[in-house]
Structure formats: structure tokens, C-alpha cells
Length: 543
Ligand code: NA7
Image 1 (cartoon, rainbow, N blue to C red):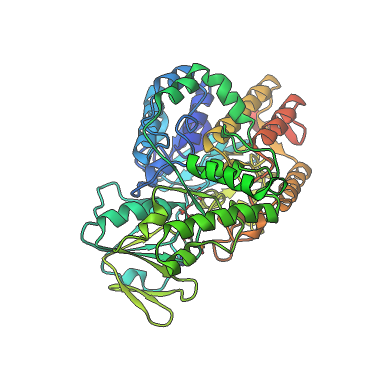
Image 2: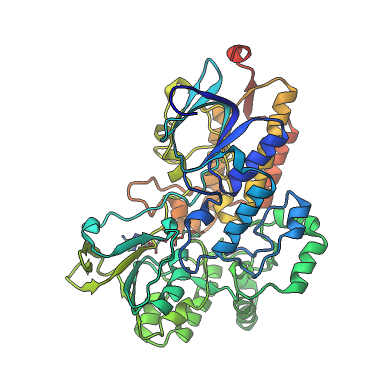
């Protein structure tokens, strides 16, 4: 299929992560021909690339899985409360095999461009291997945290040791035994990797610009009674989870943190801390809306950090004070703060003195302090939500470029479709709740909604769908408005694009909640898709 010949399909899907895999499965169910193009050598997306030590999901295993097939969810068994990366990757591989998906996936191939041919009503998709695919529909299942970012620090090429990015971890075994290791960054990835690397390395330096809040995971082997409870009525539990704010079933206390006496508040936080995981943020209803309420939770966690970390100066540095708790994705760890009590681990503050250069033998800070390292681990994050979509040169009607359209921030109706870009679908795109949610729930919701939409179109003889400009504008304004009612915009987070120099500061996800969003999408479908134009282009018959 390389060279000049063009392969004709109903749909091209970019990415073989969970979104792409499920989309392929559903499209096949509709009798469509579809092909996934995947840059990696295997399926799994996030879980293919993020193989760094300690990589683990922060959503419980019983909930971080597909719900579309009852036998799959009954038969698959998770070994731990929170699954580690190798097990999630095995699950992705199992799904690909079980539904015979691999025969329609082209691996080790990167989509470089996608152009909409208005006359034919088709997308022409090009790859770095010279493939040309022509498809009615183009689905970007490229992931929200897949475009790895290494900061622009001078001298990186001069470094004589090895460098790694957590999101591009090599597939061969990496062993830091006996080494001096530098980890740059203290987001979720670093917080998971640091305790594991510390056990191997001779010396570990953790370079921190901004501390994050982290809650212990209390990970443990799967409790069989808990697994039985889920499986006794998986479908019903999943239905409830789908209507939750985050798509995760856990108890959210409906009280305000400010309506309870301090002792009671403390008891609630202690209970959540002991239970572990992101459910900590469900301790009270207003933690992400009210600064004073948020302060009580933040102060509690700062107190915990002070209680765990023995060196007072290190403890103080680890206590976040620049953003409300939860407004950057809350981290979940296994012995992260405890790790700073080890003799071979040192926290280096690069807020006061930034990393100025990487030298052949290590790192140098402004002011001249040098740190020798054999390996450098960049745990420096991603060009989130838009990076992977815009890495493809996407051209819609009249050759208009998506990069240009999104220059001041992403615009998509429901985070699903873009005005001027007919038949282009985004799975968990900007303007959807995706990154604030259980990705599995958000992925299934998007794929199911799109599949239903395609069925509706077929029944009406339509082959082309596109949101109206008015609908898109209204949704983008709604996303901003709902976001503005929360504390989220107060943080310099990747939700805001703040981690990428020059990226527009726009709060990208829809924060109204996964359940509310689903209701909104379902209502649009039930009303016959107002806000979308459906048509059969004149040339369709000839194409
Ligand atoms: P994050 O959360 O974006 O964290 C990246 C970290 O790297 C963060 O602490 C940054 O500090 C730090 N960073 C980036 N550039 C630099 C430079 N130049 N110097 C020092 N420190 C730097 O990425 P993760 O991979 O940890 O997590 C991403 C998501 O994956 C996570 O939210 C989960 O949903 C899963 P900063 O905060 O910008 O000061």
C-alpha cells in the first residue's frame, strides 16, 4: 500500500490506544472498513510508551477497563487495586487479540498529514512511510498526553550519559544500579518513578520547580471480595460510574468543607488519606470551587508532608503553595515523600535557581552549582490535549489549517468535531471532560456517541457531518464559562497549556462533569443532532 496507489476505506483511525482500538471494533460492527495507523510497534498508546519504573494507573483497575463486552469484563482479572503499566499493556494486547483487531492496524507508521477533499467528501491521509489512504472519516484517537516534551535546555546533545523521557521509555530493561541519576520534574510521572529509581541508584537528585500534591495510593493485591462485588453486577456499577463527575465510582461527600467543624473535617480527610487515591478530592463537594474550602484540604496534605519528611527544609520545599489542591492533576504515589528520607536521595530546588545547562557530565544551575549524573530522566510532561492532534498537518475545507484555527486555543464542538473540518472526529478532544476523568469511560462514551451518529447518518443517506460555527462557538464559550467558575484556572497546569512556552493559556477540558457531559451529548443525539449539518455531497455518488 505504499507508493502512488491510494487505499480506499470508510475510516482511517490515528492511534491504537484504547480509543483507537474500540473505535475500530465499533466501525467494524457497522460493517465499515477501517484501518488504524499507529506510530508505535504495538497497541496500547499511553501504556505502550510510558514504561518508566513505577508507571501505574491512578484509576482503580476494576474501573479502568472496557465495559462494552460483558464476557471480557467478567473474564479479565486484575492482580492489584491499581494496575501497573505492564499489566495494562497486557490487557490492551488481549483486547486487540480477542477482537482480532491487529489485522487492520499498521504499526511503526506515523500519520503526517490529512487533507479534506471537498469535491469527493473524503480525507486523504498520508504517512511517513509514503502510504496514501482515502477515507470518508478520519478519527484522531491520538491521546491527550502522548506528545512528550523535553524542555529546551542548552547542552542536552553534549551529555555523555544516557537520557530518558518517562513518556518515551525504551523497551529494553533499564537498570540504574550504581548510577548517579538526575530526575527533572515532579509531576505524576516523576512521583511514581522516584521511589523506584531511588532503590536502584547510588545517588538520586530530584530537580523540582513546582511541588505537587500527592496522595498515597494504598495499592495492594486485588481484594477478591471487592472484585466479586464489581463482577456481581458489573453493568449496573458501570452505569453509575458513567454518571459520576469523574466517571469513577466513589463516594463524594455532598457537604461543604466549611459547613463542618474542624475536628469533623480533619476526621474526613484522615479517612480519605488512609483509604488512598484520587477519591481524596471527593472529601467535600466544594474543594474545587471554593478557595477557603480548598485551603483546608491543602493544609491537611501539607501537614502530612511535614509529618513524613524528616528534614524540615526538604519538607518545606515539598509543600505546594502556588496552586489550589486538585487544580493540577492530583498525584497518587507509593512512598514518594518517604523517599526523601533516604540518604541517597536529594531534592534540588530549581525554582530559585533554574537549570541553566546540561553539560557533558551532568547539570548546571544558574549561580553555578553543578550536579554530576550518569543518567538524566526527563519527567517533564507532554504537550497535552492538542500536541498530538496538531502534530498532523490537518487541512479542512478550502485547505484551512487546523493549526491556524487553533492558534489562539483549541476549538471543537463538544470536544468531538471541528467546524470547517467535516468528518474529522476527535476522541477525547479538547472541550470534552477526558483528562479530568476516567479515560476509559470518556473513550467509550465518545466512540459510542460517534458510532450512533454514523448509524443515524446512514439512515438518512448522509455521508458528511460538520458542526455549525455557532454551535462550536457556543460550546467553547460554555467550556470557558464552566471552567471559570472553578479554581482550575488558578494553576499553571497543562490543562491551561501553561507548561508549553508560547502555547495559548486556555483552560482546555470541560469541567462540568462526565455525567453532565454525557447527558448533554445524549440530548443532542435524541433531538436529531442540532448544531450539526449533515449532508450527502454532490460528488459522493461518483467517489
Ligand atoms: P507533568 O505533570 O506535566 O509534570 C512535568 C514536570 O516537569 C513538572 O513538575 C514541571 O515543573 C517539570 N518541568 C518541566 N520543564 C522543566 C524545566 N525546564 N525545569 C524543571 N522542571 C521542569 O507531566 P507528568 O508526565 O508527570 O504527568 C502528566 C500526566 O500524566 C499526569 O497529570 C497524569 O494525568 C498522567 P512545573 O510544574 O512546570 O514547574
